[in-house]
Amino acid sequence: MKTTKFFFPLLLALLASCLGCGQGKRTQYIGIVSAMDVEIELLLKQATIQETKTIGTATFHIGKLKGKDVVISRAGIGKINASSSITSALTHYDVSKVIFTGVAGGVKDEESVLDQVVGTKVVEHDYGYRGNDGFIWCGGDPGLQEPGEFYECDKALVDLAYECSLATLKDQKVFKGTIASGDQFVASSEYVAYLNEQFDAYACEMEGAAIAKVCANYDKPFVILRTLSDKADGVAKESYVDFMDAAGDQSSSILLRMLESL
Ligand code: ADE
Image (cartoon, rainbow, N blue to C red; front, side, top):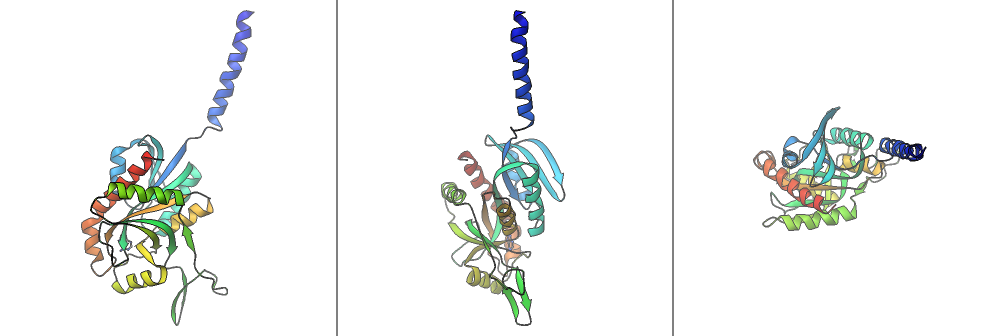
């Protein structure tokens, strides 16, 4: 009689807690995204990975980094791969915030290779209207021709990324500003001057705006962290090859510091 009195409430509590595990208590992850393997190499060395999955073209490493639950994804290069990968991450996992880390081309004259850029907003520089008179940066509806869009990075993540960049780097400069994304590797002094004049950009790359647009659609805070591997000029290709490993690691080391505060 006495045993039954204790046994039933205990059984009910156990059952309720098991149901709770299956339903409400999903792990919340910090989403980390990069385009290429070299950009996440350092992170994977320091992480404890429980599972690696491929969804479409993207690889997802799920585990712990600096004590935080993370989904680290290698999206592939370009805006389409980035969109596909971040959509998979946000729909398969409970992601609270997104940090993109990787390399970029510098746009401003005062920047040098291996300087750091923290994106405050992101724009698609190659989205618009091409007529007989050339390219107009604008919305996609040719009838309306509204101005193109900038996507704002999360202010708290921007501030943290900036502080962590300053704390991590000794000899390099740290900039905050607009990042221009497009489906082309920029290696042209003329085009890089256009990116500066048209968008007041600090860096150009090939994924940030896609991550931003999808994160905005899913209402997820995000920030874009980029180390300059080149100056997007006539020698950008050679500079990129020489510096992409160091630049990828540098951006990762700033992200590692950010994780300690998240
Ligand atoms: N990523 C690194 N350098 C780049 C460049 N110059 N253009 C576009 N993406 C880049």
